[in-house]
Image (cartoon, rainbow, N blue to C red; front, top):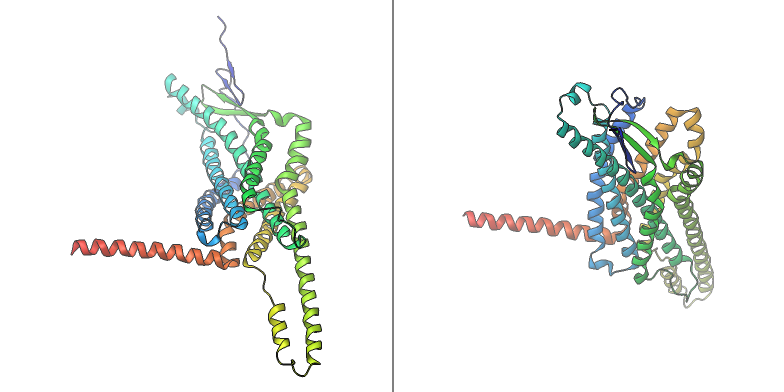
Length: 386
């Protein structure tokens, strides 16, 4: 009777014999990634908390169900899902590391039932690691293109011709965001099948990893190279830059026109002795009109996105060169770029707070309500005790 030594599944292989002495190669950059994962484990819960607060604030009635609040609520949802996927993916990765360096003596003391239980646990965590990696990638793509949508809405609001209908009405935003999430998920689907892990049943460790889809040259070139660069970082960064450039240019032209108009009105009114004291003041009030606060919020958010996402943009451009000639530099660039992406996702609430008075007002109302509620509960408990 033949004994089957391999049990082949889609994302992993269970090897029952002949693998006892096999091990994964030691990672020379292990210390760097350990520090990186510790930082991620700290920043991911903060990300979830702050974006949850932002989501609650954008749902307040003071926003009047505007298109801006609809986009920002969807962005906050994507950020929460992104932070949750990041946290779970990092936890899963940390746990899997313990099963790549399990001592042989520890494995020898396990019963057959315990060994199979641990083997199934490692297999399930290997699959979940791939799934969480795909979710993390999908939500990152969705949040990046949500910022592009915010920049496009801002461009449409400022640069469209007078009398034309907006391309982003309130009713259309949920459909656009749903389509963004679905397309991001479809694009991230191949990431689930990039690597196959080999699990040694006698020692209960992952002793080898081989590329699955990633071994295909066309997949590497078209998907991991060109496609991922355009969809994940290159496309969003370029779109935000271009749209913001045209918006800033339009605002600058309007201000220039208003200054010229003010000067012309002042010259004409100064020649009129009867209206010399009244008309210049009226013209000044009409011309010096401030930008809407929502526009400042969008400008600040797009600027922060550009600053913190640009390192990832250049990291992907230079990766093919640095990974071959300067591998240590490539690792540092990749780690720093990824951490800045997570930081960009986390600091949104501070951008909202600093650039939008409505956000600050709602935040004060919510926190003051919570403080008053806690004080009222404490007063009630004190009165009962007395």
